[in-house]
Length: 64
Image (cartoon, rainbow, N blue to C red; front, top):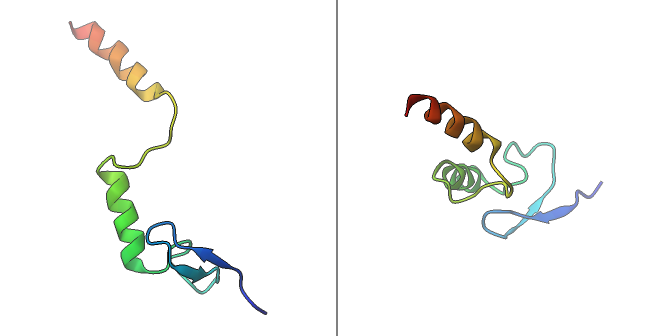
């Protein structure tokens, strides 16, 4: 059975969507790690209002 091919979200190379690939949807461990590092450095984020920021802002007002 042929597995569908997808583009690696990090490098854009074709990668087989295979259950045996522990890095899916990435093509390699390196691409998976580079993506994780980008999230950790704040280079990627989920768009929308941050409710967490609002909670922390309310807590800060108590101490001012």
